[in-house]
Structure formats: structure tokens, C-alpha cells
Image 1 (spheres, rainbow, N blue to C red):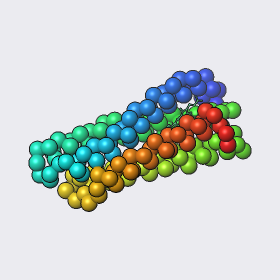
Image 2: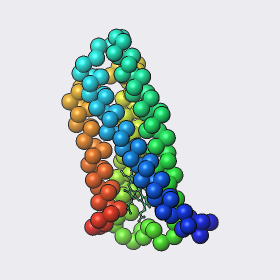
Image 3: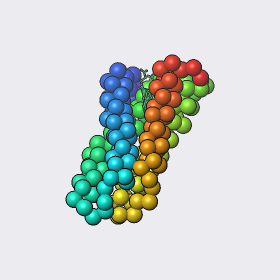
Length: 150
Ligand code: HEM
């Protein structure tokens, strides 16, 4: 099994990075949709229905499968012999940031449900600020896995 993971390593890493890109695209875009939904769209209008559909599809068709694929290929990399040395700092900063990114995904999911139920109370400014969360986490993750200063 570990031999197979070692053979697959370049492919697993490629698929990991591809799914990360798809996941991140959604994590950057969905809060932007929330900003405009909160600021410019009146409840019960055709535009409201259009935003709800875009948010639903982005989350279900792109972000959820991409998050699952990122986790599967990421965990395969963790299990590949010689890749992760838990005595170093970088796997821990990466793990903490990845858990935070997963929390942010679910936070977006809850907000989407509120928009769908017509019960959003958060402002466009709030969503603008939350939009910075995935950017900050992305920086910590990429520096952790590539520059590895920790
Ligand atoms: C979801 C759980 C995740 C797990 C378990 C995981 C685990 C890993 C592991 C073990 C590696 C291998 C490092 C190496 O080959 O030396 C890796 C590579 C990488 N990960 Fe993740 N990762 C996850 C999520 C993410 C996320 C969310 C991002 C970006 C936002 C990310 C970005 C990367 C990048 C860019 C690489 C390639 C680094 C290189 O060139 O060596 N990963 N990941």
C-alpha cells in the first residue's frame, strides 16, 4: 500500500493542487456574491432568485466536491512515506490553517442557507471583511508547504 502511494505521489500531488485551485476559486467568489446579494438585491425579486441559484450551484457543484477531493488527495500525501515529518513545524501550521479553511467553507454554507430563507442579517461590509479570511489562510498554507520557515 505504501509502495503504491509512493508510485502515485506525483499524480496525487497534481490532483491535490488542481482540487485546491477549484476549491479556492469558490472560497474567493462566494463571499463576493454575498456582498452584492446583501447590498444590492431586494428580497423576493427575480435577482434574489438568480443570486440564490448561483450561490447554491457554486457551493454544491464546485466547492463541495473540490473540498472533498482536496482532503482525499491531501490525506493520501500525508500517508505517503517520507513526505510529512511531524517533528517539523510546517505540517502543524498547514493542518491548523486547513481546518480553519474547512470551517470557513461551512460558515459560507450557513450564510447561503440564510440568504435562501430570506433571513440574512449581515451587511455587505461584514462579507467584505470575511472575504479576506481565505486569502490570509492561503498565504499561511502555501508558505508552510513550500518555503517551510517553521
Ligand atoms: C484539506 C486537507 C489538506 C491536506 C491533508 C494537505 C496535505 C498536503 C501534503 C501532505 C502535501 C505534500 C507536501 C510535499 O509533497 O512535500 C501537500 C501539498 C500541497 N498542498 Fe496541501 N493539504 C490540504 C489542503 C490544502 C489547501 C487548502 C491548500 C491551499 C490553499 C493546499 C496547498 C498545497 C500545495 C500548493 C502543495 C504543493 C506544495 C509543493 O509544491 O510541494 N493544501 N498538501
